Amino acid sequence: MAVGPRRGVPLTREEIYAAAWRLIDAGGVEALSMRKLAAELAVNPMSLYHHIENKTALLHELCLRVGEQMAPPPDDGSPWQEQLLALGHVYRELAHAHPALWQYVFNHPEVMSAQQGGLWEALDRILLLAGIPEHDLRTIAEILSAFVSGFIVSESTGGVRPDTFDQAAALLIGALEAHIRAGRTSS
Image (tube, rainbow, N blue to C red; front, side, top):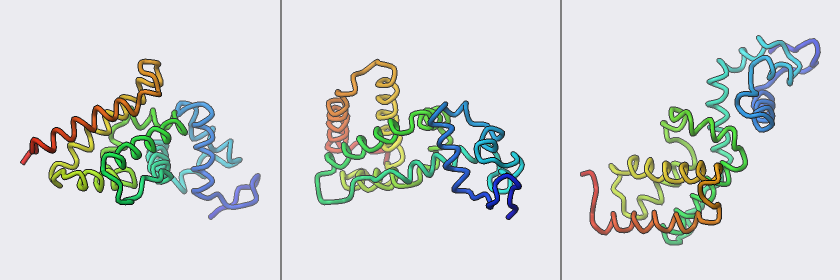
């Protein structure tokens, strides 16, 4: 690993991610460029490419890492409805903590298409607990994600008051309960 003449220490992936987060949180995803990132780290821009493929790969990795920071509700024996509401709150908190990066994810569905990480694992667990058949997990998870994402967008533009999330979630959970009771599955 080469050491830059201005730095005196080797560059690490963790440094790159931390600096990219700072740039994004300060000025949005548009504020992130490989040149600006290199300047922030006091390295030659080409040094970055020894650690990351390109800006798109960097953003994808940042999105995954932000998702890993999320602490989904544990399986503590509480009703699935309470766990689902708690997961919705955690997701909103994550979006509020990193709004620019969340907006990027929302506008680039391919980042979330893999449905990997703590959020999706917790959601699958909760939906299985609710009685959703395994073959319907992805569809139901996508619908719930679209609902919460839509709420966050509407909330950020003033279209809905933030204090109505629990009420909106209760409506959605009620609809999911009715769906389960009616045995509506895609089997």
